[in-house]
Image 1 (cartoon, rainbow, N blue to C red):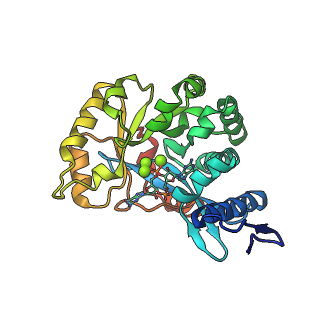
Image 2 (cartoon, helix red, strand yellow):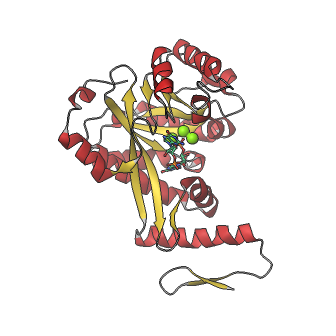
Image 3 (cartoon, rainbow, N blue to C red):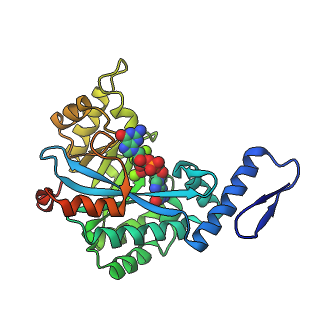
Amino acid sequence: EAKSAGKGRYTFFAEGMDASLRRRKEIETALRAALETRTGLEVFYQPLYSAQSGAITGAEALVRWRRPQQGFISPTIFVPIAEEAGLIEQLGEWVLEQACRAAVKWPIGTISVNVSAVQLRNAHFAERVTEILKQSGLEPARLEVEITETSFIENAANCQPNLTALRARGVKIALDDFGTGYSSFTHLRNFDVDRIKIDRSFVSGIGSTEDGSPIIQAIIDLAKASGLKVTAEGVETAEQRFFLSQIGCNSLQGYLLSRPMPAKAMDAVFRVGGHSSALADTN
Ligand code: C2E
Ligand code: MG
Ligand code: MG
Ligand code: MG
């Protein structure tokens, strides 16, 4: 069996290869081609809002990949494949470049970029980030890297030098998907980070029968006691927004407030204005 992988290239798959492995291989080949030709890849941005003032305080960069025949494929599918295939560094640096260049023009505090554990383990990661910051002209303090607690805990020894170097330059660190790891609470005080992002699974529990509110309250209390800022992700209802603002979340992100959008749409948001207060807001 042969499958087309764009521009006259064919990949032959061994017979009997498991269907899901075959699909992974096919995605890997197509992603490699997409990275080489820079086609179909784009970075979207989702604003973060101050829970108190409602101003836009930052934005998160989220990679998008659209294939000619198949349409959009989720980063939750292709990012792990990129990690395994040795493509994540190239992909991650490209996202970082796009995000820094775009954010330089926007009146927001920070631009947040997701960083894979594989990137964080690379001894040259902090240097690469520094070069990209210089090239883009973005102030280091305006960049925030989002890492997951699992990647941090499992690779602490390898990740720590990068994190220390980045922090020394003023780059911010956020712990993403907070609460989904196995040891969130016990490790919170040891994390040398600026912010935690409460995972959507807790936020979606607000106001439901399996009420997640006491857990969120505990997370926020502990974060505040540790001097960290708190962002809630996946805010979809007015009830969730109200509750999260009341209990001391610093910033909110979710479909209720804004969906991720192309850089051009973000440009338009700031040009048509009304968000000048975002300049003064560092939440
Ligand atoms: P994440 O970093 O936790 O990003 C938040 C995800 O939740 C995004 O999904 C976003 O579009 C989605 N989201 C935001 N608000 C809402 C909401 O109100 N409701 C719901 N249901 N979803 C919401 P997306 O863009 O599909 O990304 C999924 C994951 O893929 C990210 O989770 C992140 O772990 C990873 N990812 C995305 N872009 C990159 C990247 O450039 N590099 C790396 N290493 N990982 C990335
Ligand atoms: Mg994230
Ligand atoms: Mg997250
Ligand atoms: Mg998530």
